[in-house]
Length: 391
Ligand code: DCP
Ligand code: MG
Image (cartoon, rainbow, N blue to C red; front, side, top):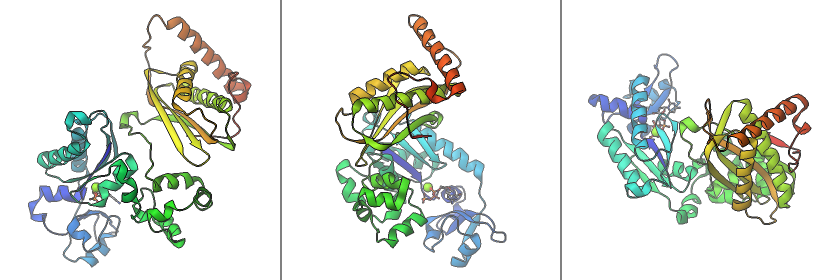
């Protein structure tokens, strides 16, 4: 399970904590009313007047003449942010901060140590309250998108759990604005064609989605079903390199598909070397004709930048973790994450000569490819890729 933790009225709650005279009254943290200051956040008392983030302070005062306006103290908020992150990290090393006041936590490996995901959620809330005098909302769900929606839906002071068998009944009735990443413009587009709830969105078939949303079609198809397989990536390991191909025509033959994978691995590992990075995590993504996608990942014992090693790992993932059926595939992707700049070599003496040979081979092929182009030199089992998107 993934947790999403988000502090309630973050800046405003800190101001009220530090100044008891402000408690129980409508308050915003923001710029000056004389200038063109905007509201950074409003406490829940002020929200009752319709005041919200990004509203001009002048307008907020108009809505609530009694409003207290406090200037931000960013250094204090940064310190609190650091303290909540330490609390998160006492429950799992896999913490991905999204902003000052929110983070995803992957607790799949550590939940059993603390009495399960729900108990972790409660303990985090209690620890934040006891140590920092602040209130957090927690969403717990099988993935990031759902956890993010869950933490928001009953704010403030909420703890919302979505179990796998509740995903559909939870999502279906929600207004589409609840979907993470659906902004005002997309929301308005959807409403024009009578898509108001997530259930409405789910009824659109892939072709209509493609017509309406182009490149984002896949994204919305998955969102509407609560599908999201992105990993929680701790901040310091956030760097990644990947490359993916959408084929001009779907590929059903597994050998052809493997050829494309070899191509992708070669180009990703070349880019890895050009940055002087090594990577430890590899990820394979397959999207089928009907928009279903699967990703399979693996952590290698040691970080590497050798094409041969990455290829071997990708080969194994491909042949053991991807169904070897003939379902037509529309997109294939390969990525490397957990990157770091490696200045020393950590090799067993035993492997050294073989690895040195691989390194020389990579150096020579990189030189040739840089000079004469990508297709001048490639592995025999690799395909040329007609259409590639790099990230
Ligand atoms: N913030 C800002 N400008 C915005 C939005 C937010 O400066 N347009 C700042 C102030 C918030 C903090 O970021 O306190 C966290 O943002 P949230 O969206 O989580 O809002 P709050 O924590 O204030 O309220 P909520 O209880 O809805 O999470
Ligand atoms: Mg918040």
